[in-house]
Image (cartoon, rainbow, N blue to C red; front, top):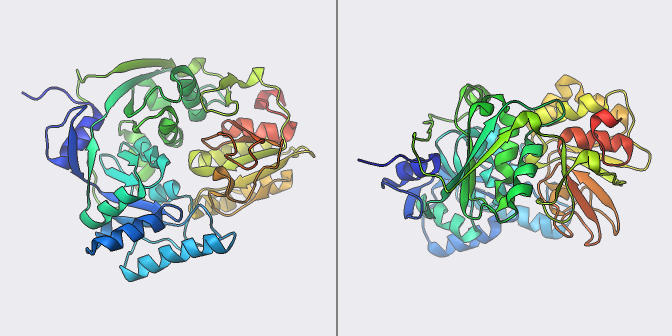
Length: 417
């Protein structure tokens, strides 16, 4: 009789055809493999060496890091992706105007769904675990192998069970929970493990917050972060998902290497100080003067994040010493902001609004920091030099705190305004 399995073990068993458990190495069929304009060119060159036909229906090409192109080098990168898509008739290529931050586009365009196995040549591919998928980042050469075969090898990870209870208080959300978790266990506390979220509190976590939490699993070293599929998941993807999908749930009695428990009602707004996501502190204890506030990215660039920030800043003005950059994560989010009047709210407050791009999150463009500058950001990393000069500082927080801080000129909670 097979012993009970975690969600990660179940998905990798189904996709490999092997009765798989943590620690085993399996070769599994992937549903989709995604690359962006930074990681794609390496994958393209390695794939061409193989001389094989492309698994074109599984391949998704999304230019997002340096688009619109900021210089000649980034234009050449983007052209290489465009040329590859044409040469191999890749239908899932998203040109500027249709493109967005890759992980949000994977959701908006229906590639991510419960029970699927998705890889991407980007470390935050684990985002789709918020929808019940097993998704994880790989290297460009691994992506090239999947281009050719539609398969890849995986070591089945152990899982950390995260039991959630209660519900978030106002101005608290998924970003605060994941900063709390990473602060508790450290940036290497989940190395090559999968977070599996469960408990009665899951029903009180909106899907947008689940995606934020799963996105930052990698910041604790995690291989994946997975939420179970429920009615909120189904509702979130019902109008966009491509094809059929098969939700997977954990078995009673499945084995976990660790159990963490959180009462969501006890959480307070958090901010991660430089230069690691594990440096979490309560916002009420942080009194840091800022030069820039940045709202967007694959972590917090969804319409729900924009609504939260707009509600905080409506009728207020951005501090005269602060630049407030608002970057929706996809064309769909951009359009929703227009239709809901959020653009007007941000513009009236004195914010700058950009089209979808990864931009400043990785220190690329559209909001780079100078020496000595400080930014409170809804992004996922605050390493040395991540958003610009190596002597700049990035503070990670949720959308409510980012918007409130843009008004105050220092890192604060909305209730402090």
